[in-house]
Amino acid sequence: MMASRSMSTTTGCLCGIIVLLASFSLLAPGQAAAEGEAACATSQCHPSLIAKKDALPKGHEDCGHCHQQTDETKKHPGSGENSFTLAKDLCQECHQAIVDYPYLHPPVAAGDCLICHTFHSSTPSLLVDSKDHLLCYNCHKPVINEGDTVLHGDIDKKCSSCHTVHGSFFNHLLTGPYSTDFFNDYDEKHYALCFQCHKIDLLLHPKTSYNTNFRNGQQNLHFVHVNRKSRGRSCKLCHVVHSGKQEKLMAEKVSFGDWEMPINFVSTANGGQCAPGCHAPASYDRNRATSQSLPAPSPPPETEALEKLKQ
Image (cartoon, rainbow, N blue to C red; front, top):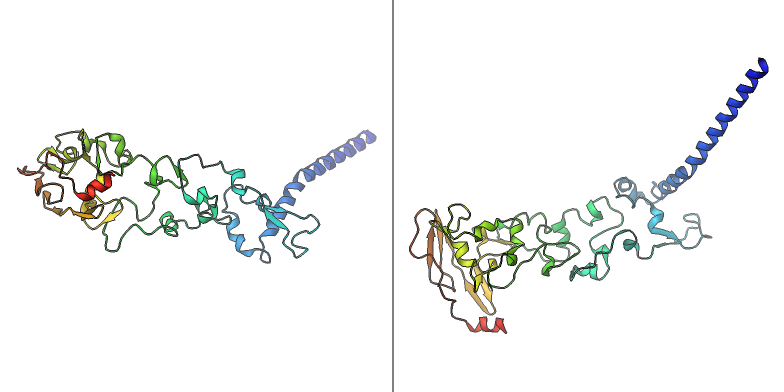
């Protein structure tokens, strides 16, 4: 009986030791890796990275993934020498190639990710600046002009509502099709970008009492101007894109080559009036239709500047 109990106790102890050793063997590599990573960001070494380390996106917290040892005989930091190099094709190794677009953001085309991104950052997407419009202004001129009080959407906060970041199938890195011509044979595809936010109904119905405020009584003046089989007016013929000084982003003037065509739009309580270079002075009233509200039924006479634009 005593021998049996002694053997059972011994066997139990041996099993416990084996399990304990096995657990050590499983934990040791992870512990070593954690200690190695922690050693890179301490109060003595790279202290600026301590606060950022926990906020880094998955895959960026492992220093050794990007910084590779080039000389095993010079162990950093013991040797006091820089024996690391950045991995070849550093970004592309993890991030899917984003160059399969006809229009590329110039930094992407040049393979210079660091124009907009930084390796060590806790900002979203590792951006140099978390506010994307401020990041864009590092290279691009601000699109909100001094004195402008009417802004297009959230343009004072971000550019990405209308523009893509890396590449696009559309010119100017737009998120959808948008015609930059002044006149178009009507096709809703020309304005698909605008319809991501604006309702397409404002161009579909000749008469309406609610689809648009640009109406003379129930006559839809957006439809009159834009929805034409030949030479329909485009958005940019009357509106500015980014910001302006007049409500509804009405343009003060539009450039036709060397000619600055005035719009002369004036808002009224129930409508407005304009005296542009493309048709005779006209006015509209949402409550009581006026008799002069239509642009000229035939295209305006071509100016020398317009002829130059066609060439």
